[in-house]
Each structure stands twice: as C-alpha cells, then as structure tokens.
Image (cartoon, rainbow, N blue to C red; front, side, top):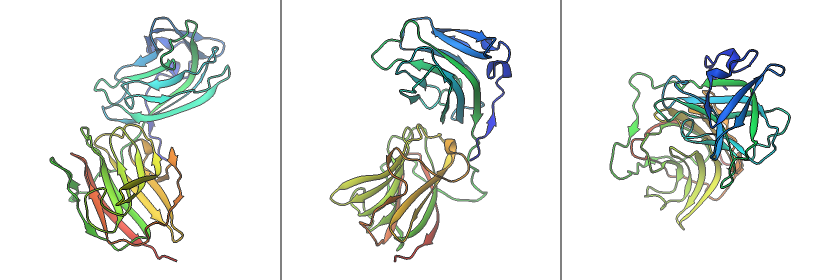
Length: 320
C-alpha cells in the first residue's frame, strides 16, 4: 500500500531527540520533554472530558486523507481512548486502547474535515466520566502522512452523476452472477443518502424490490457488501468502517464471486491507499460465502445526490 509522504513535522517535535514540545499547542494540558527517554509527556490540566495537543494548518488541504502513527504509554491505566475530534475524520476514535506503562504502537486513518486543517491528538475519558486529575500520556515517534488520491479520470472519460432530485434507478443488462465486477465512485460532501451498486439483480426495480447482491457507500460511513431480497430483507455480508470517506475523491471497488459462491471485497482510494487491498471488515467476514442467488439479469447503480459513478469491466465466471 502507498502510505504517502510524511508531512514536515520537525524532528524535535516528532522524535523528541531535543525539546520540540513548544511546536505543538496545548489542549487542556501541559507538555514536558523527557531528556533521558527522548519523548513527550502530556498531563491533564483543566476540567473537561479530554486533553492533549494540536497543530493548525498542518495538512495541505481540506478533505485530505491522512494516516497518523505514533507510540504511546501512560502511567495511569484507564479505559480512555485516543481520538481526533472534529478535524480528522470528524472524530476517529479508538476506545479502550489498553494503554500500559510500556510503549505500544497506534495507527489511525481519516480525512481532514475543517478548512483550517487542524490535527488534534487527544486522550479522553469514557463518557460520562471526567478525566482523572492525574491523567497523563507519553508519546513518541509521531508520523503524519498524507495519502495521495487515486489517480483521476483520463481525458474524455465519462461518468454518471446524480445532480439533484430523487434517486434514479439505472438498469443495465447483465447476465453475470459469477465473476469479477469493478467500478469507481466519488462521494459528494453533502450526500445524505447512500450510493449503491446492485451488481447481481433479477430485475430493474426500486430498492429494495429486487433479489440480488450489491455494495453501498456514504460519506460518514464505510463500504458494505450486502444481499437483498424482495421480502424485503437486507443482510450485510461484509462491512468495512473506514470512517468519513474522503470527499470528492474517487474510490474503486472490486468484488469477485468464485465458482464456489465465495465473495471477496477489494477497495482502494482515499485513506485506503492507491493499491487494491482485501479490506478488513468490522461486520460479517471477507471472504464470505452465500449461494442464495445464482443467476442475474441486470446490474443497477443508484446514487446519492452529488455522487458520481463509473461502471468498470466485468469478468465473467463460470458456475461449477
């Protein structure tokens, strides 16, 4: 995976070989450089539910996908969690990070949402508890990388876009129920509904009045592989939560259905990087096996307002 280029954080403020703590601004905290261990300790100093440090204008652009990595430990073992409120991914959050007195590695990915391009690194109490008065954490080896976008469209390449109005169902003749499907999509900042591509369908119809399989997506959510029946019954087969998807950024999805009815979900773009990966899912499994529907007549894209879609190649498979 392409992790992108590291941002120019001064070495003294990321590796702490010298005292670079002043480069970071305090958030309900004080900072101290540890000259022996070459790291930075952040100590709670105010009322509230979180504390830490931040930096303004650290990213090159709003809606920039980024990856944050660092080592951290704490002298106070608690069920607090690291998060990046309002600014990276509108709150990337990891509850119960299992901070110990020994260093552990942490990694987060997300999308910058504010125009002032802040980055916060905070530790917060599990609601509704307040932060203990003696709370602290120590941090080192901070690496901030911007993830380059998926390459844009070739000159003259066309795409579908839902400009406004109610969702429109587009039916495309497709007899393939086994094989590989690939397509690109772009999420609009103001999208409230889900974009959806039912790649195996028995008929053209408004969701959920079809039988088949599909993938959907929405800004603020991840990507879901699902099965749908006219009961209506919607079953999530695999779901990957990638946080707030990068706005106005092209993603590409590939789904393979093998001859033994195993579905595999791949994706790339935004915070996922430029190389296809078999995504790790939070719900269901990937690969996942389902044999409910073994024939197809159509595939159907349905877009949220402002979303864009490019149908890609379909490689036919053969049922055993």
